[in-house]
Length: 400
Ligand code: STL
Image 1 (cartoon, rainbow, N blue to C red):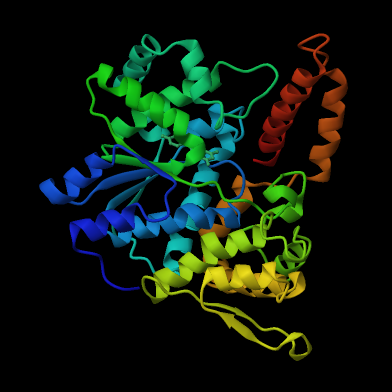
Image 2 (tube, rainbow, N blue to C red):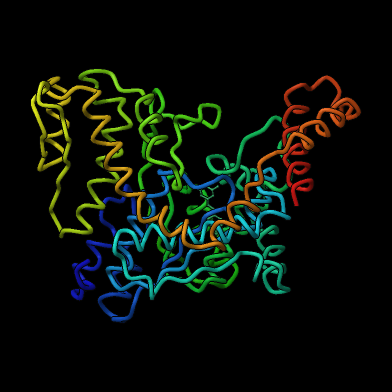
């Protein structure tokens, strides 16, 4: 990849490239133009499910930040993963955090990004300290229950009987900005309400307001751009074998001429295109499809608009688009899979962070279910949610 960008204005352009929204951009400009020091940014992720290909979207922004000379911290928010309806039980979350770190590093290396200025912080390493706890209580005396609830509405999993943890989650995210000592926080636009909560309350604790940068939400591969855990084909793992990638891409929703609900085109627009640009220089784009001769032969598109238009006018068929995207993804994943296969610690983190439920485990689960009883009589949905969480906890316990 080309060298780090030097000019402050160019830096700002790269730092904010492709973002949907920036709040308090002047904070960023002041650091770059007046203080003339590296901008300090953090991106938080809760190590819950296995990262899938959608993970490339924030990675591209981390690449921009690093290329602009920023000091980037990745917060592996283990306690947030636990607080979000126990999406990650505490006994596996440390392995998941390790797995996420391996994945982030492998992705950035695979797209040729220098990672010397990238650091990883595990949330619980500072979030259980005396000062942090006291600040959390101070914040709890300022923020209303309603505001905390609303702030988490797009991020915390919404369930029938919401737990108190969902109110703590946003407050901790506000404090993370201070405790990670950054100028700015980056996240998806789904984080917006939490970012605003921070801007409205952090000064009352005696801390300075931070800038907030938001990526657009990128549609997935399912119908209507959904990525759903009930449809395993709508998610492609980062460590996915080429054959499976092809299979999953083949089952993606993609109707002839439909460029509106098309997760494949979105993937080219938000991932394959920007990765090509990172590798080959600003303003470049290339997307190659090894199309059979009888459908027009191999073709290279030199802009995303050309590709989109060709698909819209049905000069490019879903089958051929799928073949091109599958090949593009496999090329993207190849060096990451190679790192995984060469590193036993990477494999161990995956195996221990995501244990497969054994037969034995399944039997135990069934037995337990009979005795569970109902904690919330007459509230079926709530029961189901509680059971799901308990099941997850059991799975993790038995495997470790
Ligand atoms: C998710 C999914 C996602 C973002 C996050 C979690 C963010 C978590 C987080 C936690 C603490 C912070 C900042 C961000 O300080 O897209 O499960």
